Length: 250
Image (tube, rainbow, N blue to C red):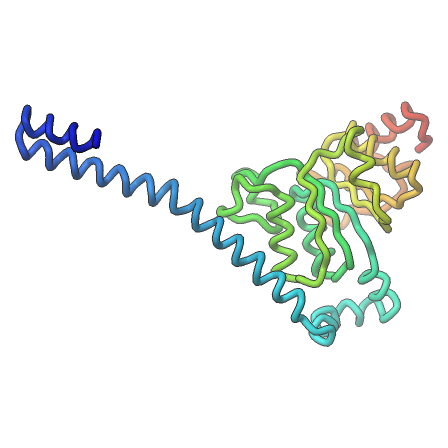
């Protein structure tokens, strides 16, 4: 009604040509708003619903013989017993950036039984150069959901628990509350690392921490070792100092 009144005023004051221009401008604006704002949101919503439905359908229909074939190379490497332990594992990955996203996707491909993904952050443009699962369409979405979608598309038989929250002293009980076999620390903040390690020690949980390999170029110098043995790694040294301040001798 208001648009019709506005159109009548324009025609009365400036003539029909101006009114036609007004109609065209309004139509173009409407098309732009729909194409660039409304349509992407609606399309993403329905695509997510379709993906969720397909993932659930595949989970229910995937036979064990097919799963066994998917994991046959792992069994050849680890042996039947070792592969069985991997498949029965309940794992928590905290931090889904350049390190954690690669770890989580490979654990999914390995067929672990249950995987909890923890990260409060969203996918950003600057993280696309190192993230294992994210693409341009994932920018602005939760990292946990991005990695979850990737694993469900690759290994839908893996149970995924997505936790888009920050790990800290308030949430540690919630995140480490279940029956867990091992925790992987892929956090880049040393204070938060210290809180996690302390919580795992008190709960007698095994934990593996990713340390300071950023901007390093020689993969042959990577090693797995107790924290007490770490040298020439500023992050590891600082974490050890933080833990000693908490009464944990590393």
